[in-house]
Structure formats: structure tokens, C-alpha cells
Length: 50
Image (tube, rainbow, N blue to C red):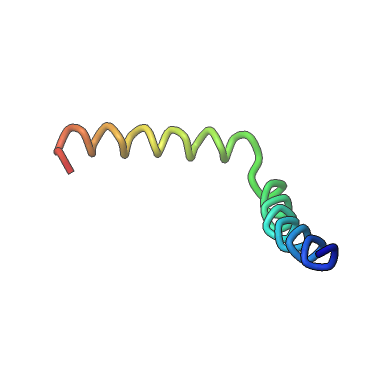
């Protein structure tokens, strides 16, 4: 039982490590730009009923 739990914990931790490595690549300006692009996309989607 213990061994299975350890393996599950290791599997859970892997995706977290990957996502952490991506965070430094985006600074706050990049995130703001992406948010603006998303808002424009949402607006156009509503406007044209896509």
C-alpha cells in the first residue's frame, strides 16, 4: 500500500514541476497582452455568434 501511494504522489508532482518551469518565461507584460487578446477574441466571438 505504501509503495502505491508513493508512486501516486510522484505522478502528482510531475505536472506541477513542468508548469513551474513555464512560469518564468512569461512576465507580467506578456500575461497582460494575452489577457487583452483573449478579451478581443471573446468580444468578436459574441459579436459574430461563433
